[in-house]
Length: 513
Image 1: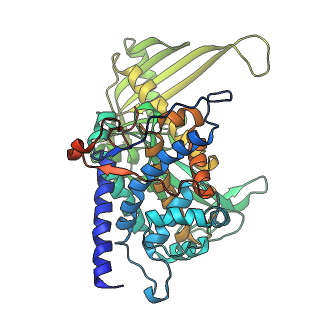
Image 2: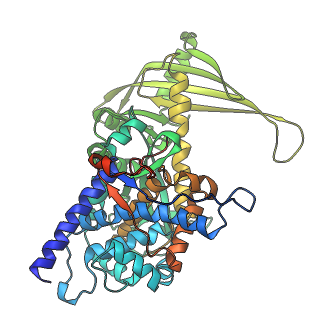
Image 3: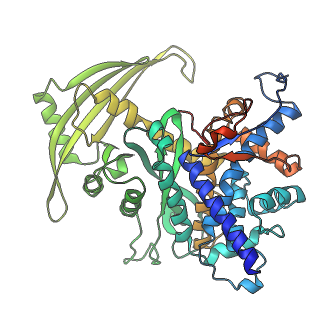
């Protein structure tokens, strides 16, 4: 490559990187010049978009926004170290990384499906517009071989940089003026009945107590207004290589992984400006101390079998503090709250002391539609949490219903990634390093899709087609070759005079709260 061409590509890369930052921070504006057209009416139930014209317009909006982001990511990935011999490589490292992100953006469930769906000429034409260096379509196995030896931490660092840029933007502060609400939970990626890697976590399952090996990951997500869930950082649980039936086996666990995850989260969301919501596995002294160390608030589920000394003190104080209770109506349910503040708890060999706040909620309602038929059934359930805030009559409903009860959103997040096209549980590679690389690319793709489907320009179509239907239809048209000539004009905020009267002016990727 000549020096002149190298300078041109470097200049284009810097412009793309600048544009990516402006899109993430909401500084860029988009002008779409289209002649006025008569709105086509839907011809089926639900008001969907069956006409070719409507589907093309819907997919065009998605691709236009996508073209704002991918070139910047391509240039950002170009700084990663490539261990391969450049003279023997057909595709550059950033090209293969963006190719892997596109495979997850298109909700392709496997490597073979990637070769089949986006290996055609039409998709190649679209990819050439986003990846100027692309000469031929890569093979999915080429990406797998690259991820086996690449430094995955470098890709994760690039994603963390994108998250920091997004969280520090003015658009994010408008949607989330208070503390960041972060959900943390672990989930299994997949498991096999043989030891496919020395880092795999071993477990005994089944009646025969058979040994299985699995990939277990600690996930964190950010909850925004309007139910928007942004995937944050992940921490993989890794074995030390000793068999689980050995006396020297020391396997990783969620609490140890949370300590590593918390250090990374503090660099992304900062200290003192987040609230952690977690299940009962994290109701322990080390996790609470870690949250207080970083200045984070927390609402952690407290089970009856956990922290027995705290429960004993709570049951005793409950009789001595009758004023710490509240009966509230939440929808059709009646909630009875009891709480106690400042319960002392000691843990560890150093007898470290903590002051804990405990709140319980007894909920009663009538189930009008029992699953087995018959009459309405009275339902009763009880919840309990550890709270970082001192519980009062004024904030107890807010802490329990608006913060602690939102933990179900991370479960819904797992459902989306496992069953709605992102291939969370698919074995893309048995190599441990490649598995982590694929997982990181999937997170980046999910982050991009989340931004696009919650933007102003796509809301009209997302409400009709749904999240997955919108993305799948857009890529279906790309693969069929009907969106090769889609163009977009991106203008800076200062260039407002270039907008015509009939153009659509808005901040790029302005999320709907």
